[in-house]
Length: 478
Image (cartoon, rainbow, N blue to C red; front, side, top):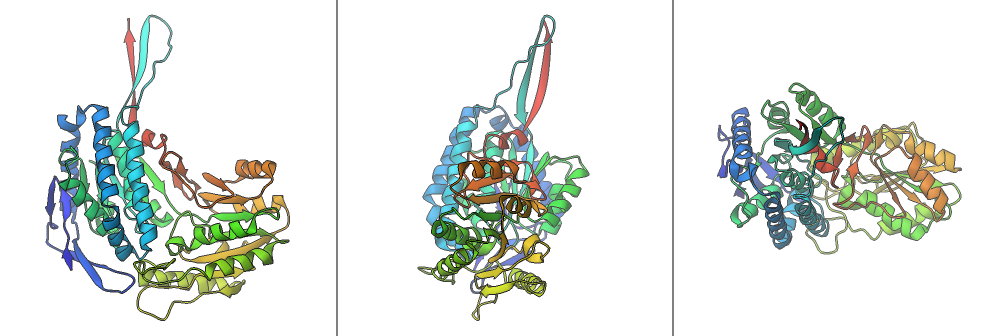
């Protein structure tokens, strides 16, 4: 069992009071490691070190192109260590090794993408009256706190770390208390490599969200907070950040729908629908947890989905051939099953799964429920587990109305060969992202953004850099 440490001010250290917490393998329930439980004093020390690194000439005055070279070196380290990191990720989170490896390589790709943007953060000149020169500068936001979720522990950490560093900010990353190990291992690899990253620019703080996360979110020395998590956590973090008027980027929940029309390729759609809800055991904000299907093809599509699910063996993520791993924690599985039971009491027919697996670990069956009404819990609430709720529609208008009838607005999928219908649906869906004839899909260069209760701000793409920079206007009388 490893005794891991935090990375503060360029040093690996224990918590101020020496307290630790256990980290489990959810597939076995065994303790994998211990990590420090950061105190408020540790948070303060971390913020002070981050502020010092921000103002140090080694970082503040660095040529932006050099920051890009550093990020490229960090990407190279990530690619080189991807398999080792994927083993840690799979063991600590419960996901399959194949999923973990893909996600970590995606994180490396994200570092490469923002490396290329580091020297392309530009201001503008503005025509104004009289003999004047007026221009803008885009300068680093400052010290940024990154509160990382447990469902994609390393990928989503890198998703926000990359643009923050590219913009010249400093980073304090706090992984989720259930899944801190891959971020710690990655940080060790970065620390040991010759990347040129100055001391204190990147730090890793472990501990509880209620203590360390809140302390970071409400800290006067933090200039920006980035959170990926649930809506209640987002509201808490936003409230804490508001005490200092600290800007936030919040990527929160989702209740995505795959909307399948009669002219869709049902066999291909069934594969993508399963991928969109059973990958990572459904523990994804962008999961396609609702299936809205035209009544004419309902039976055929449900049959195809169930046939595809039968090809998804469930088991420990490191076992060969497993397609769906365990949930992240037995406590989380209990919450998913409780919501499922409550939802089924409101109506719907359980046609597949619905139970915990009778074995060690936080395993659950892939679940499909048909006949779900728009008022039901399974239609409206984010279960964050492998549960697909199926609802029928009879017209394009009804499909759109059903898709939008949720407090969330992250990603929706549209399945049709009618070009006009596809673009109309994409225009009118109340969500930040729409995917047509594939699901789910994203790239480092495309905006990952939610509407309504799904969040505030943009991750990925050039738009993400706007959060990590401040605009300054300069006026010169000639």
